[in-house]
Amino acid sequence: MTLAAWLRSNIKAARKRGAQWVPFVDLARLLPSAEGRARLWTRLVHAGEVHQTTPQTAEERYPELFDLAATLAPKAKRILSFGCSTGEELVSLRRRFWKAEIVGAEINPRSREIARRRVSADTRSTVVPPKGLDGTFDAIFALSVFQREPHKVAETELEDLSEFYPFALFDQGIGQLVEMLRPNGLFCVINAQYRVEDSSVSDRLEPVTESPSMDSIMFGPDGRRLDRPIARAVFRKL
Image 1 (spheres, helix red, strand yellow):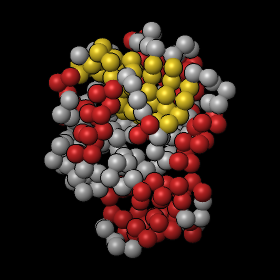
Image 2 (tube, rainbow, N blue to C red):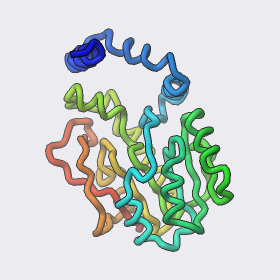
Image 3 (cartoon, helix red, strand yellow):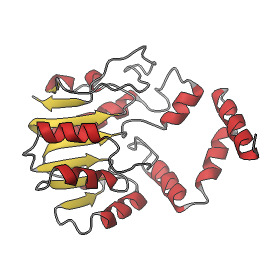
């Protein structure tokens, strides 16, 4: 076993047993890189509103979901990618929605700037901070956004998420997005740690028959881990 592998194994074991020194190791890992420092700044400055704290993304991460959305909402005129990170999702959406106005919202300033550069040649795409959003949308995507460091949750086999990522924060975020969604608009949420069906606005949404199911580790409104949860990823606003 290499030294790096040995360290990873020991840190993982320490995190699982709740060793108090592990958060300091996680902090030290962030400081050397510009990306890490931006993550740390975002976490500190926006502690009460940030959901996912890591910017990892890629083009065509969810091609089946993107294709389904394009089939269900081919005439969408205005689309929101909430938590667009460094903008790859905006590029994927543009391939399917050629004529739509596409808005990316990103809370991490470094990721937001990278996203702006990525779509700079696309005059129908813009990137703004979440507080800069206005108007309504025909389709809203929040993909791998409503979760908090899922790898740590899995490593520690966490049974209660409420202190790490409270349901109230998730519920508030879902409610704000649904408020911006036009009637009959499409709402796509995947890789969330709570179910949209449990949100306070679930009565304003209807699961789409063709919707894929989420198979990630999920928790109930009380923060407790759910056993074999059933959760949809695509909804229509009533």
